[in-house]
Length: 309
Image (cartoon, rainbow, N blue to C red; front, side):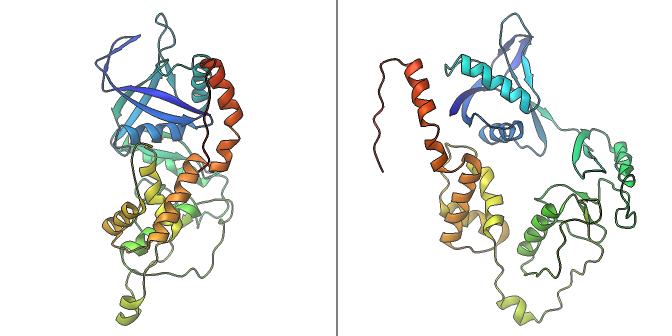
């Protein structure tokens, strides 16, 4: 079941329980949405640059208590549970505050699992990334990490010797963008899921000079995969109000990467991106009994007219 949420933003807190001078927008979310997806949806709807800015999400339950801040998935579940008890569209709007991200912001690295565990705020904290030395057998493979040679963002196009990537998926995403940006194809000779006890991948050797004949480089068509196109398209589909047709996808890929894709590729990428964000249409029908029951309780004596399309 989808839930409509009002967003109050661009205002100020005049007291602990009073948020004034705000603007209003709205989003529609599923009942199983995660904290990260909720943040991404709000960033897209309010057109906030998530690279340089962060947001704080709060809501007021009672005028006599301080607002509750949503920090994680449990906070989202608690908020949705509160909303179920008060289903009105104007009940418990989310108050959104925007903050600037600190310069030199880095990520700490869990050496045992290869996961990012939390963020610090100063450039000196890059030394903390040396924690990777413990519980990893192949020290020659995993050198000391620092903020300049450790890639966690799959949107990066940085490939060079001694570059580190947090996992195989990040490395693949970066290589796909790199080859499209530089107009060449590449072939995988051998591929392992991980190295020793770490998910981190390292570029041991990299030659950026193409040795293929000019004829092959010009006449060989660079292919943009469906998965790659989905990565570009999905963020633009968070906002359900935005109309983004396959032709828009084609123009986006052409403008950003200079690569031509077919209408069928664009259409398939959009459909898969929508399925990834909203689920399959067939799964939505499973929610119909619950939706009808809620509708009958909130609006007694109402009726539904359904038309097969």
